[in-house]
Image 1: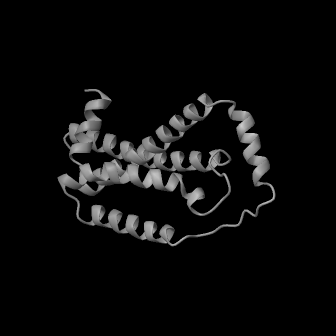
Image 2: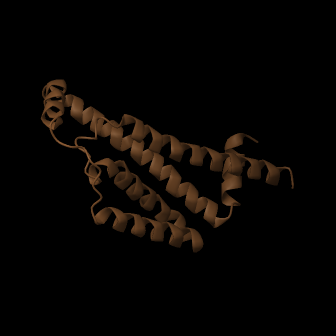
Image 3: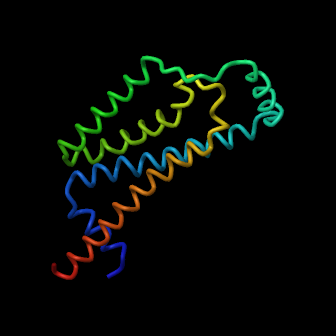
Length: 159
Protein backbone atom coordinates (compact mmCIF):
# COMPACT_ATOMS: atom_id res chain seq x y z
CA UNK A 1 0.00 0.00 0.00
CA UNK A 2 1.20 3.48 -0.66
CA UNK A 3 1.13 6.60 1.49
CA UNK A 4 -1.86 8.04 -0.40
CA UNK A 5 -4.08 5.14 0.59
CA UNK A 6 -2.87 5.35 4.19
CA UNK A 7 -3.61 9.07 4.17
CA UNK A 8 -7.15 8.57 2.87
CA UNK A 9 -7.77 5.75 5.33
CA UNK A 10 -6.48 7.88 8.19
CA UNK A 11 -8.60 10.86 7.12
CA UNK A 12 -11.77 8.77 6.89
CA UNK A 13 -11.22 7.24 10.31
CA UNK A 14 -10.40 10.57 11.98
CA UNK A 15 -12.80 12.29 14.34
CA UNK A 16 -15.10 14.78 12.62
CA UNK A 17 -13.47 17.66 14.49
CA UNK A 18 -10.10 16.93 12.88
CA UNK A 19 -11.67 16.80 9.44
CA UNK A 20 -13.46 20.12 10.06
CA UNK A 21 -10.25 21.80 11.23
CA UNK A 22 -8.41 20.32 8.24
CA UNK A 23 -10.97 21.79 5.83
CA UNK A 24 -10.73 25.21 7.48
CA UNK A 25 -6.94 25.34 7.54
CA UNK A 26 -6.47 23.94 4.04
CA UNK A 27 -8.92 26.38 2.48
CA UNK A 28 -7.39 29.21 4.54
CA UNK A 29 -3.88 28.51 3.20
CA UNK A 30 -4.97 27.99 -0.39
CA UNK A 31 -7.10 31.15 -0.35
CA UNK A 32 -4.32 33.35 1.05
CA UNK A 33 -1.85 32.02 -1.53
CA UNK A 34 -4.32 32.31 -4.43
CA UNK A 35 -5.52 35.81 -3.52
CA UNK A 36 -1.99 37.15 -3.20
CA UNK A 37 -0.89 35.48 -6.43
CA UNK A 38 -3.90 36.81 -8.36
CA UNK A 39 -3.43 40.32 -7.03
CA UNK A 40 0.29 40.21 -7.77
CA UNK A 41 -0.37 39.21 -11.39
CA UNK A 42 -3.14 41.79 -11.72
CA UNK A 43 -0.99 44.57 -10.29
CA UNK A 44 1.94 43.75 -12.56
CA UNK A 45 -0.26 43.94 -15.65
CA UNK A 46 -1.34 47.48 -14.89
CA UNK A 47 0.21 50.42 -16.65
CA UNK A 48 3.51 51.40 -15.05
CA UNK A 49 2.97 49.62 -11.69
CA UNK A 50 6.30 50.71 -10.20
CA UNK A 51 5.69 54.38 -11.00
CA UNK A 52 2.20 54.14 -9.57
CA UNK A 53 3.49 52.42 -6.42
CA UNK A 54 6.16 55.10 -5.98
CA UNK A 55 3.49 57.77 -6.39
CA UNK A 56 1.33 56.15 -3.72
CA UNK A 57 4.29 55.98 -1.37
CA UNK A 58 5.02 59.68 -1.86
CA UNK A 59 1.38 60.57 -1.32
CA UNK A 60 1.33 58.72 2.01
CA UNK A 61 4.48 60.33 3.48
CA UNK A 62 2.84 63.27 5.26
CA UNK A 63 -0.03 61.27 6.78
CA UNK A 64 0.10 59.49 10.08
CA UNK A 65 0.03 55.74 10.07
CA UNK A 66 -1.72 55.09 13.35
CA UNK A 67 -3.68 51.95 13.93
CA UNK A 68 -7.44 52.58 13.82
CA UNK A 69 -9.80 49.81 14.81
CA UNK A 70 -13.25 50.32 13.33
CA UNK A 71 -16.30 48.66 14.88
CA UNK A 72 -16.54 46.02 12.16
CA UNK A 73 -13.13 44.57 13.05
CA UNK A 74 -14.13 43.22 16.49
CA UNK A 75 -17.54 42.32 15.04
CA UNK A 76 -15.84 40.22 12.38
CA UNK A 77 -13.63 38.58 15.01
CA UNK A 78 -16.67 37.72 17.13
CA UNK A 79 -18.55 36.27 14.14
CA UNK A 80 -15.57 34.19 13.00
CA UNK A 81 -14.93 32.92 16.52
CA UNK A 82 -18.58 31.91 16.90
CA UNK A 83 -18.56 30.18 13.50
CA UNK A 84 -15.36 28.31 14.27
CA UNK A 85 -16.62 27.20 17.67
CA UNK A 86 -19.92 26.05 16.14
CA UNK A 87 -18.15 24.02 13.45
CA UNK A 88 -15.75 22.42 15.92
CA UNK A 89 -18.18 21.76 18.79
CA UNK A 90 -20.89 20.29 16.57
CA UNK A 91 -18.95 18.37 13.94
CA UNK A 92 -20.97 16.59 11.32
CA UNK A 93 -20.59 15.49 7.74
CA UNK A 94 -22.19 18.75 6.60
CA UNK A 95 -19.79 20.78 8.74
CA UNK A 96 -16.86 19.14 6.97
CA UNK A 97 -18.08 20.81 3.79
CA UNK A 98 -19.01 24.11 5.47
CA UNK A 99 -15.52 24.32 6.95
CA UNK A 100 -14.04 24.91 3.49
CA UNK A 101 -15.91 28.14 2.62
CA UNK A 102 -15.58 29.22 6.25
CA UNK A 103 -11.78 28.91 6.07
CA UNK A 104 -11.71 30.73 2.72
CA UNK A 105 -13.84 33.57 4.10
CA UNK A 106 -11.64 33.93 7.16
CA UNK A 107 -8.55 33.98 4.95
CA UNK A 108 -9.94 36.66 2.64
CA UNK A 109 -10.90 38.82 5.61
CA UNK A 110 -7.72 38.30 7.65
CA UNK A 111 -5.63 39.02 4.54
CA UNK A 112 -7.26 42.47 4.42
CA UNK A 113 -6.84 43.14 8.14
CA UNK A 114 -4.11 45.80 7.68
CA UNK A 115 -6.46 47.77 5.43
CA UNK A 116 -9.39 47.23 7.79
CA UNK A 117 -7.39 48.65 10.68
CA UNK A 118 -6.61 51.84 8.78
CA UNK A 119 -3.00 51.37 7.77
CA UNK A 120 -2.02 53.50 4.78
CA UNK A 121 -1.40 51.44 1.63
CA UNK A 122 -0.42 48.25 3.49
CA UNK A 123 -1.22 45.82 0.72
CA UNK A 124 2.09 45.82 -1.09
CA UNK A 125 4.20 46.57 1.96
CA UNK A 126 3.06 43.60 4.02
CA UNK A 127 4.32 40.57 2.15
CA UNK A 128 5.64 39.24 5.47
CA UNK A 129 2.14 39.39 6.90
CA UNK A 130 0.73 37.34 4.01
CA UNK A 131 3.63 34.90 4.29
CA UNK A 132 2.97 34.52 8.02
CA UNK A 133 -0.70 33.74 7.32
CA UNK A 134 0.22 31.19 4.66
CA UNK A 135 2.89 29.51 6.79
CA UNK A 136 0.58 29.31 9.81
CA UNK A 137 -2.14 27.61 7.79
CA UNK A 138 0.31 25.34 6.00
CA UNK A 139 1.91 24.19 9.26
CA UNK A 140 -1.54 23.31 10.63
CA UNK A 141 -2.44 21.42 7.44
CA UNK A 142 0.89 19.58 7.45
CA UNK A 143 0.44 18.55 11.06
CA UNK A 144 -3.03 17.18 10.37
CA UNK A 145 -1.81 15.35 7.28
CA UNK A 146 0.90 13.71 9.42
CA UNK A 147 -1.76 12.64 11.95
CA UNK A 148 -3.95 11.21 9.18
CA UNK A 149 -1.03 9.33 7.64
CA UNK A 150 0.06 7.89 10.99
CA UNK A 151 -3.51 6.85 11.79
CA UNK A 152 -3.94 5.23 8.36
CA UNK A 153 -0.71 3.23 8.74
CA UNK A 154 -1.79 2.15 12.20
CA UNK A 155 -5.14 0.91 10.85
CA UNK A 156 -3.46 -0.93 7.97
CA UNK A 157 -1.22 -2.79 10.42
CA UNK A 158 -4.31 -3.94 12.25
CA UNK A 159 -3.80 -1.74 15.32
